[in-house]
Length: 317
Image (cartoon, rainbow, N blue to C red; front, side, top):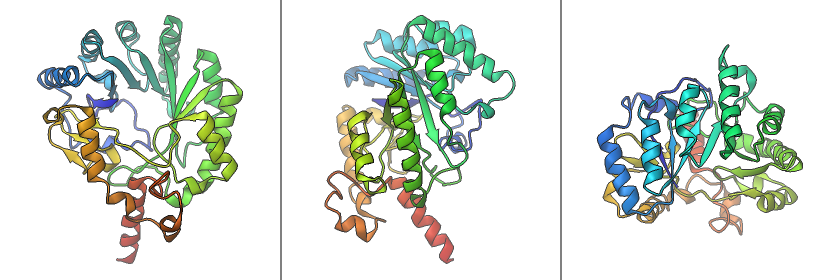
């Protein structure tokens, strides 16, 4: 599934966000002309699904129309949102969106009035019978999850997408380092067990370094958590100008025009080839000697490894 970043504007300023800094690089929303081109390409590429994302995609004035046209073209629209949009917009989106993926933050991250708006939208979506998924990003400042479990019960949410905070391209956001991951992963294992105990399925958004887990925890997550892996694959993040990146934290691995490729598979192979050498750089000696390296594990997030290298080089200056 591709990710269409229709805008980098947002009505929140989450400290862990790795997309926020891209607003300066892409100040304009996805234009009508570019969406027409992209939709034609998606239809020709026979994509089964496409995600609308941001920033906050509901700030794009034409989002409802783009979602409807995508659905009418036989492509399942998925919406990644913070849920803070006018309730009237929910009524336009519900008939077409196949999955509302709501980034559900800790309560103290919402300003006065935002919590009530979020509750109204979640209640409306849940009441419509639409699929509703929560997204949780664990960061050094925000690691709680009891509030999320309570919300899953309140709105009938049965699946949660989770990840640790990844560095932005400049590494200026609130993110975990490689040195933090072993402690954080232990916390996440407890979170997944708490979800499973309540009948809520979980899925990892990116990859982790497998040696950061105890063997029994690794076996558990491989068994119960969807997409749990030690190897990352291209997310194909498409910007408003129709350029595309491997992922936002690795946005320098990019192509100028996604529609120049015959389809999603060709683009994924292109990106996979571009990062082949990167998978083996900035890894420890333990990684090179590990039987799982480059088979089931790549030694952790490439963006995290690159951020660690930059920090190390800066410390030597």
